[in-house]
Amino acid sequence: MARKLNAFIAGLIALLLSAPILVVAGVSVNAKRSLDFPPKGFSLAWYAEVFTDPGWRGALVASLVVAVLSAALAVAIAFPLAWFLWRWRAPWARAFEMLGMTPFILPPVITALGFLSFWTTFDQYGAPWTVVVSHAVFFVTLPLVTLSMGFAAVDRSYVEAASTMGADDRTVLRTVVMPLVRPYVISGFAFAFVLSLNEYIVAYMVVGFTLETLPIKIFNALRYGYTPTMAAVTVLFVLLTGLVFGLIARFGDLPRLLGAWARHD
Amino acid sequence: MIRRAPRSLAEHAPILFPALMLIVFFVIPFSLMIAVSVARRVPGGFYEPDFVFANYERFLTAFFGGVLAFSLELAGLVAVLAVGVAFPFTYRLARLPRAAQVRWLVFLLSILSLSEVIIGFAWSTLLSRTAGITNLFVALGLMAEAQSLTPSFGALLAGMVYQAFPYTVLVLYPALARLDPSLVEAARTLGSSPVRAFFTVVVPALRSTIVATLIMAFVFALGSYLLPQLLGRPQHWTLSVLITDQAIYQSNMPFAAAMAVFLVLVSLALVALALLAGRRKEEA
Image (cartoon, rainbow over all chains, first blue to last red; front, side):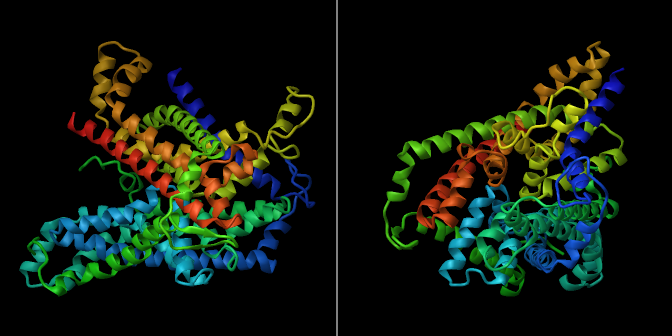
C-alpha cells in the first residue's frame, strides 16, 4: 500500500515536471501554423524549418560555437587552478577557488550587469568573442567543482610510486593523474557546455544586439507571437540537454558528482 | 612528491592563468559595477564617474519598496513550496536503487539547465487557451470552455516553483544520500510508522540542512528574471527584472548597478547564513 502510494507520487511528480515539455512537443507537430494541443494534423515541417531557415540555423550554430568555446575555456581556467590546489599546500590560493564559485551562487543578473559595464568600459560591447569569455568565467564553477572532486579522488600512493621511480611533476600529471581525472574533465566540460547553450541573460546583456544565440532568438521571436518552430527548437534543445546528461551518467558516476558518497568511501 | 608550499616562480606558474582570468574578468567587472553605482547619470543614457549616492536614494521611493517587497515575498513563497515538495521527494529518491536514481538525476539536471526562456515558453503554452490544460478539463467535463490562465500570479508561481524544484532537490541530495539509514531503522524497530519516523527522526536530524536549503532556494528564486515577464503581469516584476529593464531599456546603468549591488549584499548575507546553518549541523 505504502509502496503503491510512493510510486503514485513519484509518477505524479514526473508527470508535472514533464507536462510543459510534453505540451510543447505536441504543439511542435501541428500541421498548420497554429499552437493547438492536442495537435491538429501531423507535420515535421517545423523541425525542418529550424535547419533550413537562415535565422534559426544561424542562432543554432552561434549557440553551439559559443557553448563549445566557452566550455573549453572554462575547463582551461579550472584545470590548472584545481591541479595547483591539489599539488601544493597554498591556503591563499583558496581565495581564487572561492572567486570561481561566486558567479554561480549570485543571481545571474548581477554577473551579467558586471560584464555589461566591463565590456562597455573597454569599448568591446557587442563583439561576439566577449560572450565566450563571459560564459567561461560565469560557468567556471562547474569544471572547478568536478575537477576538485576528481583530484581529491586520486590515490596519492600512485603519485608517490611514480615520483619515487623518478617521474617529475609533468610526467606524473600526464601518465598517472590525467587518466584518472579525465572523466571529471569531460563532465565539467559537459556541464558548462549545456548551461552555456541555455544561458540567456549574460549573452543578452553582452551581445544581445549583435549576435543571436538560440535562447535570445526564442525570446525575440516570442514578442511577435508563438509559432510551432519555437516549440520544435525547444524540443530539440531538451533532447540535446538530456542526451548530454545521459552521456555523463553513462561514463561517469553521477550520484557521486552530485555529492553522494559512494558506498565504499 | 611532497605536498609543501610552492616556492619558485616555476612552481607558481600554473595558477597564473586562472588567477589572471578570474581577476580581469570577474573582480574587475564587479568593481566597475560598484563604481558605476555611484556614478552620476548624464541625460542621453550615459554616465560620468563621480561619487554620488543619488542612485541609492531612489531605494527610498514607494515604487522600489513595492518591487522589493514583492520580490522577497515571491522568493520566500517559492522557496517554501519548493523545499516542501522537494524534501520528502529527495528522501525517497536517495533510497531508490542506483539505476533509478541516475535516471531521475539525469531528468532533473535536464530540467534545471533548461533556459528560462524555454521554461517560460513551455508554461505559457501549457496554460494557454488553445493548447493549454483547460482543454483537458473541458474534455473531462470539468469546465465549460477553454480559457487562458496566463499571465497571472498563479502562472508565475507555478513556473518559478517548477524552475526551483530540481535545484532544491540537488541541493538536498548530498545530505539525504549520506543520511545514516540506521536512524530510521531504529525508529521503525521501535514501532513508529514510516511517516512518523520521517517527521520525528529525519526532519529534526536535518533541520539545519532544511534551513540552509530554504535560503539557497530563496536566493535562486531572487535571480529569476524572465519568468515574471513571460508569465506575470507588470505588477509582478521582480528586482531582477527591474535591473535588466533599467540597464537595457531605460539606459540607466547607474541605477541598475546600485540595485545590483544591493542584490549582491542581500544574496551574500543570505548565502553566508546558509553556510553557517550548514556548518552547525556538521558540528552537532
